[in-house]
Image 1: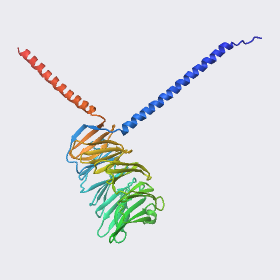
Image 2 (image 1 turned 120 degrees about the vertical axis):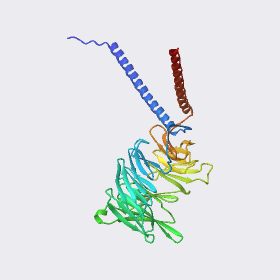
Image 3 (image 1 turned 45 degrees about the vertical axis):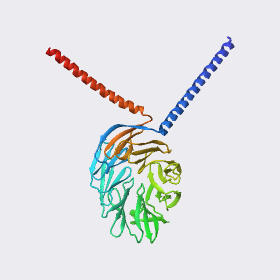
Image 4 (image 1 turned 90 degrees about the vertical axis):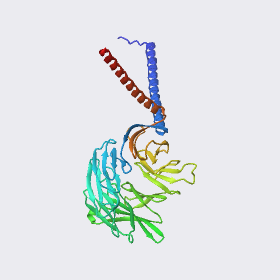
Length: 437
């Protein structure tokens, strides 16, 4: 019987070699992982620096002279823009290029939106128009002058009308049917200041103001329309009264959460069943402005007690009422809005752009005649700026060298073209002279 003879020395050497090979593979794998982590951290650092660093310069890439834009306004909508005014409304998927344009004749047009719908109304007039990204959906003609209106994501419309001796709060469905018609008098419920409709169109909230001698009272009333078709009536869910306080703005965060804005306080209501106050945000300072974005509710507060820190105090809260930002800021503004993740404030030609963290990304006076709107467009820190007499595409820069280089390149190109043209003319004259000789 044959016997197997093992060379233990060779076997041991191979085992040691395998260990070395495995060790090298592990070292390479760890090196690869460390490299990936370093690259991710580097990219994150660069992204953080780019998103939080301040630009000191700007250039105009495109400039288009226009007629007076003072009565024309822009609003972002459906991955594009809505341009509207007294004479018409149009949707632009790409800025400056109209997908559709519809003429109107409004004295005091105002626009409200709840995508995928927008509502254009004439304050003091009798006409409302409902649109989506494809164009006009429906016209509405009401009996009395329009005071205020809003629209839901379902296309349901709420409108406050100023009647003779009393006011009316009406609701229409997307087909144009009158869903509710509530009469309001100063002696009974008070004057309806504002109203808001829930995204699903089943809840309506109205703020009424009643004045009794030297005192005033605001009542926030909650109505339910989800059972309206079966009960043939409007169901009052509940209400809250506030003495000597003015609730002049209402906003639905979602189907079950309403935010009511007062002079120095904001109330968050849960309206899923019987309405209840779930949070109250109060300020010592008077609220100067309120701006609402997709993720945040912003406040500009008077900071005259601490002017050395900044002219205003800026606060951001999320949709649940939790504070996310509280900072002092020195800026000039007449209008302030939140566009995506950026806060844009303008006054005359002064433009201030901040991020949600309170970092000032840009603050300079622009070359133009009165800023009407600043709208972010595709591209890093690129904006369409609407002046009263022109529209420009503005790009922000960290340093002026980029702008100087671009300008110098354009000048060099023009001078080169002129030199080539002159050279061509000289050559042509020489050829002509030689032929004549």
